Length: 117
Image (cartoon, rainbow, N blue to C red; front, side, top):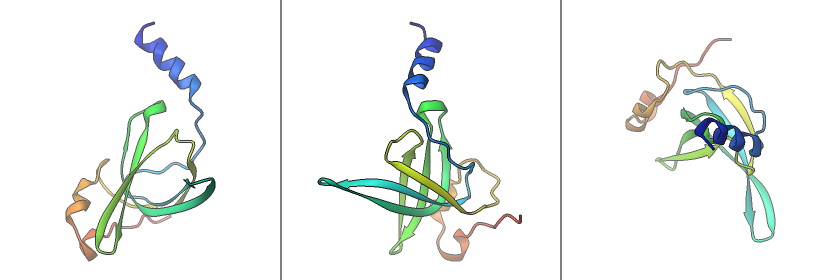
């Protein structure tokens, strides 16, 4: 089995939900399922999209937020069965696909200009 056939096979095996289109700089809320013992609940994580990476079954996105003056980043795979929904809160205007420079900024300097609709 060569590489293109293997990629097609993996893509056919993975179930992928439909989410709204977003990109780096957008502020989103990610709702994901957490299992605690035998109970399951949905927790939300709101932050700025730092990057989108990969294609197809291996695509991921990184979301960053500030919690108690500490930067928290979380990587979410698009094909995760625990990913419940994604809501777009604000569209940001950035000129990079990966905005890692945000890690070094604090306070007002870390603001992202909002896109006009």
